[in-house]
Amino acid sequence: LDTEEGELRAYAVILATGMRPAKLGVPGEEEFHGRGVSYCATCDAAFFKDGVVAVVGGGNSAVEEALFLTRFARRVVIVHRRDRLRAGKILQERALSNPKMDFKWKKVVKEIRGDQRVTGLLLADVEGGEEEELPVDGVFLYVGNLPNTEELRGAVDLDERGFILTDADLRTSMKGVFAAGDVRAGAVWQVAAAVGDGVRAALNAQFHVENLKGTAYI
Image (cartoon, rainbow, N blue to C red):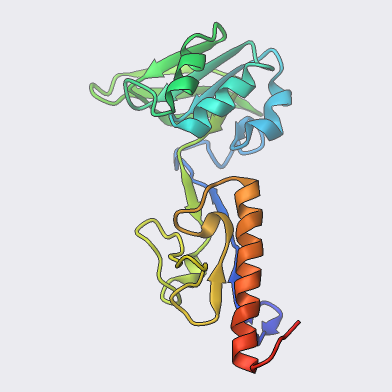
């Protein structure tokens, strides 16, 4: 392995590089990151106590975090490009019946606006293109996740989204290289599942090394 600290040599390698939130790529997103733009409600919800916040997205993560935000904000607006949520039925029912939640259907964010902090969003209708401004104190973005595998392209096989393909023993397409956690294709994005992956990958890596050395290796 080539690293910033030089070359490392090993009998086995476990890739656990995780993933990161996908970005909208609109004006204001980078400028106001940490000043009203967030990707983690459980991290930042308390900063918006009694405020108005928007949540962009319509899947399970977006709706779960929007519901969590209602414990702090006085109003939570879900902005979704479709005319219905993609989240599971129970989450949908909880969200649609929550008096602190509103919805902007068939809308996309064109710009995140503000001064020192976020003050609003410029929304556009996905069909007609009509624009409107939504005043908010903050915006939480849940438009998917991207695997941290840019440096691995060409080294191990990836799926169409860039997640690492593994077999049942978490082996990748390169001999001696294993993958664990969120970066693995088909992984369950939960901490407990990632921990379990780590244990399995470590055990399988140990077996791999033992086979190479021909004796138990601990």
